Structure formats: structure tokens, C-alpha cells
Image (cartoon, rainbow, N blue to C red; front, side, top):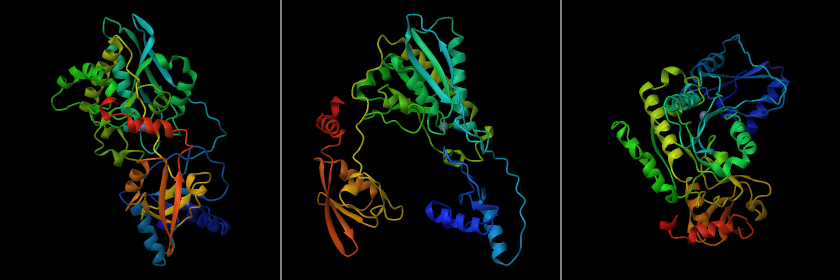
Length: 405
Ligand SMILES: [Zn+2]
């Protein structure tokens, strides 16, 4: 059965599905994205479901079929679908190898990527590229006659795409080691060469020292240190480490071309750039060695910026001032906000979109006066962050002079 594109998500879609299921439909066809991608995403746990199969086809195929059906033609489809549900939980394994340190074997530099991938293609870029640079950095460093001062640990996680299960498990099971992990270098951003990294100001001097020789490796592949106001957990296996207070990094890489590949049928080995890969492996090996050789661990002062203030709503995509959903238990619910309310001003500043809303929300004291448009009415409300446990940290962060961070 074909689903109209507009019904390809959310509640509307579930209504359409159950209506078709009642009519005895065996399956539903939905279109991939208009630019030809079939994007795999993980809804990591789902109940075993009876009812129609859910099949996604290329957008052009979908449109061709729809046009034929609308013109009155009858079509019969044969689908070869080889998905299987298994009862969970499914055990996942991390792969860990140590190059044991000569002086401080119980202090660590972690080099890592993830070994799992979506199966729409080969997972070559996400994250075969990170696995390959991790292995190649290990090979390069193990081939030296000398051992590093600290242990360099190479880790390939599993269960990343389903919710960082491998790295969360690692952080949980190695909790007593985390204060001795100097730095975590995570490669999970595609094949474009490693072009930079974002230390905090407290770490900057060490990073300048560590990465000084990288600049000379290849003039066509420059490397930049970008001072970060605080590390953010981000979307990969460095996140659980940042959350646990460990300096953990996702390399800066150009995202050019990556959107087309990421989690799609296009993510094949043909898309991997060999020269970029070789260069990146060298950057990682060199960085891991030089971090391991420092006479101290990487500085953790003001490692993580406090969480931004949140309202407890989802904003609409078309007009991002419009409340599309109110999160139960959130501040907005407590302040009586409703679906359809339009945010027009915060503390007297008019706002045009979600970006301005987010920016105004972070400024000033903990009580934010928000003007909402509700139909023809204007409603004043207050979002009060006074009791938010993060608020003290936000204050301290705002008051600290920028150069001290
Ligand atoms: Zn990935």
C-alpha cells in the first residue's frame, strides 16, 4: 500500500496505517527522501508488531507507482523482505586493545570509533572510516621500538547507532579509571580528513604542543585548533566521557558530501577517500603518542558548559515560534502554555524564530517573562528557572570573564 508523502510521519501516519490494516493491507510503501536517499534510522527498541509490513522505496519509484495507480492502472508488487525480529536483549561487544605504557601504564589515552553500522549499505563511512583509522593508528604505534609513557587504548564500540550502548557500558564498567583517562579521541565523522579539534582555553597550551607537528604533515590538509567555550557531549561515543567529566573529542571534519552518505544506501567503500584516511590515521597516531608523552593529564578545568535553559516544548518546523507540543512536567506546562501558542517576546525582546528564542532564553536572571499570542489574545507568562539545579552553574559561567575560561 502506498502512503501519501505527507503522511510519512507521526500520528497521522499511525492513523493511516491502522486504517489500512483494518482493510486487510499486507504492507505499506512509503517514499524515501526527495533527493533519492533511503535513510536508515534507529528506533532502537520497538515492540513486536503484528499488522502491515512497512517498506520504504526510492522516491522516484514511489512517485511513478503512485502516478500509475492514480491513472487507474492495477499493479502487483513482489517484495523480497528479509527482516527478522528477535527477542532481546541482544548482547553487543566492544573490542579493546592496549599499547601498555612504559611509565604510567594505569593512565590512558583513548583512540576510538564504532564497529556497528546501519545495513542499508556497507557502513563504510559510518563508521568504517573511524574503525580503519583506529586500527591503522594502532599498527603505526605498535610498530615503533619505543612504548608510550602512558597506555594508549584502542576501542571499537558496538551499539553506537542504537544509543551509544558500547561507550555507555564502557564508562559504566571503567568508572574507577576515568580520572586517569587523559583524553579521548573519537573518529566518527566520515572520510574527509581530520581538520581540527576544539580544546577549552585551559587545555589550549597542551593542544598547541601536541598538534604542532601535525601542521607540517601535509600542507594541503591543514589542521586548526578551535577554542571551545566548553565541551558538549555530541552525537557519538565521546559523549558518555564528556558527561563523566573526561576531556573527550569528536574531530572537526568537513561535512561536505556526508549528508548524502550518512545512514543511507550510498555509504559504500567507493565513497572513502584513501589519501584522507591515511592522513587521518597519522594525525591520530601522532596525537595519541604526544598526549601519552605529556608530563601531566589534560586539564579538566571548566570542561563542560552547563546545559542551556529549556522551555519544555517542541516548536513547529514551519514557524518555529509556534508551540507544537508541550512536554509533560516541563516548565511550559507548569506555566499553562498550550499547543498553538506563539512565542512573540522574551523579557521585552521580540523574537522571530527558534534561534532568537533560544538566545534570549539564556540571557540574564532565572525568571523569563514570555509573551505568547493565543488566538487574538496576548498572554504573559513566566518561566522560572530558580529551582533548576543547573542554574547556579550557569550563573558562575556567565559571571566568569571570558578570558578565564
Ligand atoms: Zn557513526
